[in-house]
Amino acid sequence: MIESFKHLEQIAADRDLADAFLEADEQEHAVPREDILEALRKRRAVMRDCVERGKGGGISMGKLVGNEAKKLNEAFLAGKTFLDPLTVKAELYALAVMGENSRMGVIVAAPTAGAGGVVPGMLLALEEERHVDPEKTVRALVVAGGIGSIIALSANISGAAGGCQNEVGVASSMGAAAVAYMMGGSTRQSIHAAAMALKNTLGLVCDPVGGLVEVPCVKRNALFAVHGLTAAQLALAGVESVIPMDEIVEAMVRIGRALPRGLRETAEGGLATTVTGCEIGQRIKDEANQRRAERAAERERVARERKDGVAG
Amino acid sequence: MTIRHDRKVSILDVMGPVMVGPSSSHTAGTARLGRVAREILDEDPVAVHFFLHPPLAATYRGHGSDFALVGGSIGLNVDDPRIPEAIRIAEQMDVDITFSEEDLGDVHPNTVRIEIRGKVREAEIAGSSIGGGVIEVFKINGFQTRFKGDSPTLLLFYRDRPGMISEATKIIAEEGINIASLSCSRKQRGKDAFMQIDVDSPLSDAALQRICAIGDVARAQYLDRIP
Image (cartoon, rainbow over all chains, first blue to last red; front, side, top):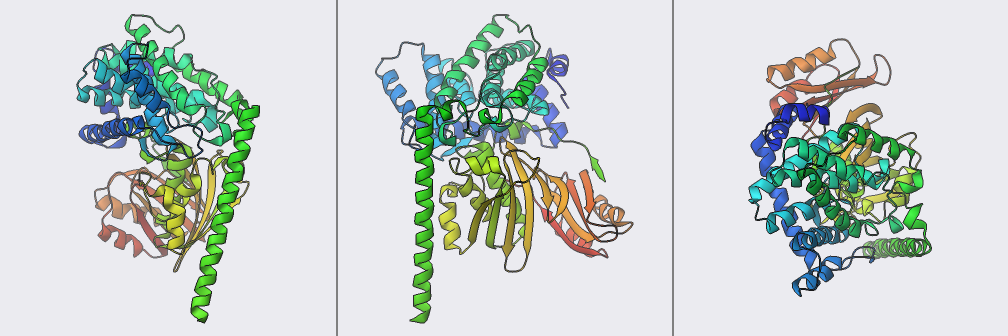
């Protein structure tokens, strides 16, 4: 078992990082590496499919979001974006996945659904723009998953446990390491990419408006996909995190514990309790109550009809 | 007693599952908890009552946890596109669904207790959705345990007496199956007891029959990995 990032650097310094993770996982979970790779090939395909569907837009369950990817895609296709194509696509694909997620579409939790746009945004954009072999992307997903599994040794990966740093922060960290790997970086560079990405999300709270995975989640995934790319860029240039990755994870856990309950996914603080956030929250509650009342009335009607049917 | 080689979260747990949105804790994890209840019941449910821990009760609707819990309890997988329709499907199946709030104590925020009843049996579980679709069931039919649904598992309900562990594990060993972890709990010495054995590979029907035939075993149930 790979016990820490320090341990990872020792055992994988001069070898392929994906191979090191596959070997450890194979031993730990008795799953053959080819099965892991095959599952991740399918998951890459689900991500790809999700991006295509998401570009078409639509309205989310809470009706707060849904067409961000469509708008950015239209601007991009019309030549009206000013960032470089890699950055635009990273944002676009993250938005597309999160749009699908907000409509209860089929997605890959990476590591969670609420942070599920970051990794595919980064990796699929890079694959396309730098003509990376899709099989290399699959191996980069191994790296992303491996980084997340070491973080998960000490931290619960959920906004309820430690805020958004534990979700989007972890996703951008996993993605940064995977991107460094895809670009030919060393194990050390991948770890430092992960470290710089995670370090700069510490303290990020989870304050979803109306308790929905919509605001700020959808756009946040896009912005932090770009954040992860920049961390990988620094690491590939030889920039290193002064604080080691293991200590950053410890800090994340401590900060998560210190966060008040209202900022851990409960929708009882932060953006959720702004004037607009409260208005939206109230509307969502009212609508849910109305739907429940309608369902109850419908059940009663069906029961009455049945009774009448028996009597008749 | 507990013998446990603690399992690390796997690569596929982190980069997954493939699921219906919008929240891995509130949708995928809760669907899997519903599914655990359904698998332990081992028949079509007639009534399911979900008791939500207050933080989950505050957030579940917006995340579709109600669809997911119900979907799991009627046997849908986390990636089944019918999950958004699960409550309607359950109504068509004539399943009586109830949601209540209940303080479940010092537990993870996303924790639920589920009472599920079929025509023949009934079952009860309590568990938490701890993130990324990963679950920890800590109570099964009144017994303390820790069940994650990430490996094939044998659940044994029996009368507490000496030799039960060795008789059950002997049969598993004779099948050439490795035990990943084993835990027991009991309500009282010599009374109702429970054993959970997580194994590395599937258990054959023949082996399960042999385990069922051990004296004082009330029920032996084999669960595959919960998808």
